[in-house]
Length: 213
Image (cartoon, rainbow, N blue to C red; front, side, top):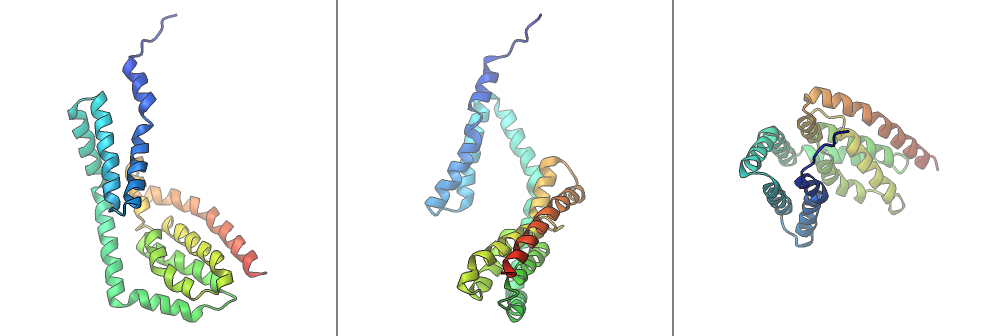
């Protein structure tokens, strides 16, 4: 039986490929620990990825790969920019304070978990970002929460933000995953909606059991 000849460089690539994602993680951890901007940590990961790729390929492949990534992600960057502009304008125009004020008038000790969960879902769907939702709603809602409910309300905030993010046509996750999987945003959102059903049901069951105590 004929044996397939494999170049030694192929084994080298596989053997040390784990250093590429590790460099990104190390860069982010370093940036956070040194209180640098997070993009510096990502830049460290990119520089090591460039060095690793150049060690096994030509500069032409490095440049083509970099340019391909830029072309694939520029639309995502535009979406992130627009989301940032919208959130800033909502803060200036009083929309965010209005939403939190409405939430505070509806909050009671008997429904604080559900109000937090539903508000988090709604805002995350509107702006397409779970992280922005936690930053906007987290401080005022947790300030209104009795101390013994803080942990479960924080969980409701996180759960609602994740469910809303996976259900939003404006979600940056939809844009990034569409480019990574080479699918249209509509197809990606359809798949994410299917995966959001179970987290929503499980969260609803857990919060129902918590409020019934």
